[in-house]
Image (tube, rainbow, N blue to C red):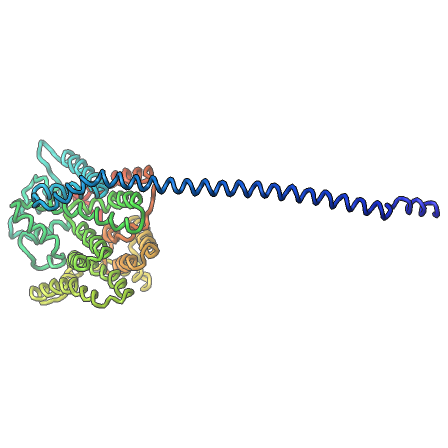
Amino acid sequence: MDDEADESAGSEPSEDERRERTIAKLREAWKLMGELEAGNVELQSEVDDAKRRISEIKDEVASLEKRYASLKKQETAPAEVERKKAEARPPEKAASLKGRVLLALRENQRYLLVPVAVNLARALIALSLFVAHSESGAFTTTYMDWRYAGGPLGEPFSVPIPKGHWSYLFFAWDSIWYIRIAWVGYEGTRFAFFPTLPLAIRLLYSFTMDWGLAVAIVSFVFGTIWMPFYQAVAEHYMDKERALLNTFLCAFFPFVFLFTSVAYTESIFLFACAAAWYYYLRGKLPHSFAMVAIAAVTRIYGLFMLIPILLDLFAKKDWKSMLYSFVPLFALFLWCYYNFISTGDWLAFRNLQVAYWGSPTWASQFIGRFLLGQPIDWSLYHNFMLGFIAVALYLSVVSLNVDWKLGAFAVIGVISNLFMGYLWSYTRHLTFFFPMWLTVKSSNKFVVGLACLLFLLCSIVLWNQFIMRQWVA
C-alpha cells in the first residue's frame, strides 16, 4: 500500500511544471488574439471599401437618372406642345366620339368576353332549335299549336304574334302574360305581373312595329347588359381573372342562361340589382337608388337591395344620403296605387296571384304540413328541390363572409322566397340573388371551361323543354 502511495505522489506535476504550462497557454491565447485583431482590421478595411464603392455607384445612378430625365423631357417636349395645341383646337365631335368609344373598348375589353361568348352560344342554340322544330320549312312549337299564337284581341291568352314567327324561340309560359299586358294593358289576373318588362316591350314595339322583334330585342338587351355590371362588382371582391371566370360560371349556369335569354323578368332584375350595387360602390347614389327602383317594380324582392345600401350608409352615419331610399319606395307606391285605382286593392298583385295560382310555398307544403301532421306530397322533383334549397341557403349564408351587407340581401331574399315564393319556381327565383355567386372563386380555367360546357348542354335541354310547354322553373 505504501509503494502505491509513493507512485501516485510521484506522478503529480510539480509547481514549476504547472506554471510553465500555464504560461505556454497564455502565450498561445495572446498569439491567437493578435491574429484575430489583425483579421478584424483587414475585414473592416474591406467593409469600408465596399461602402465607398456603393456610395460611388449611387452617385453614378443619380447622375444617370438626371441625364435620363433631361433627355425624356427633351423628347416629350414636342409631343406636349402638340397635345396642348390639340386641346386648344375646337374638338371634332365625330372624331372625338369615335376616339372615346375606341378608348373605352380598349380599357374595358375584358367586359366583352362573357357577353360575346354567351350570345354566341345563344345564337347557336336558337338556330339549332329553330331547325329542329321546323317541319316542311315551317317553324312550330307547342305554344303555337295551343291557344296563343295570333289569336283575336278578345281571347284572354292570345298574343299579337303570328304562328310560325321565329320569336317564339324566346317566349313561353309567363312570357305570354307580359306580352299580353304590353299589348292590351292590365286587367284582372294580369295585375299579378309587375310592369317593367311589359313597359320595355311596349317601348320597343313603338319603334319596331313588330311585337316579336320587340320581345327578342328586350330579351337580348337585358340578357346582355347585366354581365358587365356583375363582373365589375365581382372585381371589387376578387382579382380580375377570378372575376372573369366567376362571371362565366354565373352566366352559363343553366337557369341563369335560359331565363336571361327569354322574355322573363329575371334579366331585368339581375341587371338592376347588380347595377345598383355597382353604382353605390362608386359613390353614384342617384344612379344606385334609381336601379333599386327598377328592381322593385320588376320583382318585389328587388326592394331588398335597399338593405345593403342602407346598412352601409347607417354604418357611415350618412343620414342625408338615406333620403334617396324614398325613390324606390315611391316607385313601388305608384305601382300599388295603380293597383288600387284599377282594382280597389293596394296589393292586388299579390292577392290575385294567390287567388289564381294558389300559394304553394316551401314553408306551407313542407314545414306547415309537417307541423300539422298532414301527409307531404313527395316526389323525385321534391328531392331535387330540397337539395337546391339547401345549396341556395348555404351559398347565401357564405356570401356574408364576402360582404356581410350585400350578403344580407341574399339571405333575406332566399328566406323570404321560401315563405312567399312559388314552390315550383325556386330553381329560377333563388338563382338570381347574385351575392351567392360571389362565393364561387376559381382560377383554374380548365375547370371553369369544363363546367361551362356541361352547363351549356343542360341549357339546351331546358330551352327545348321551355318552348315545348314543359315546365322547367
